[in-house]
Image (cartoon, rainbow, N blue to C red):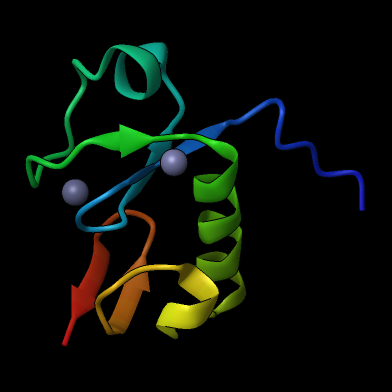
Length: 81
Ligand SMILES: [Zn+2]
Ligand SMILES: [Zn+2]
């Protein structure tokens, strides 16, 4: 596996788990916000959460989140129970 977490291409909304293209405004400056009002992060941990979501993981232990995810898509984010 040659996936590098040093070149993030996406970032994750910390609230709704939407996935959007990585930008410095979202990741570093925090000026780009999600439509839900949440903040984006594109750190290594968030990259692995994105990968886990795309692989179909929905349990909070794999995702390292506190909510229970009922459904998820990159464009719509997660639906929590
Ligand atoms: Zn959001
Ligand atoms: Zn992060």
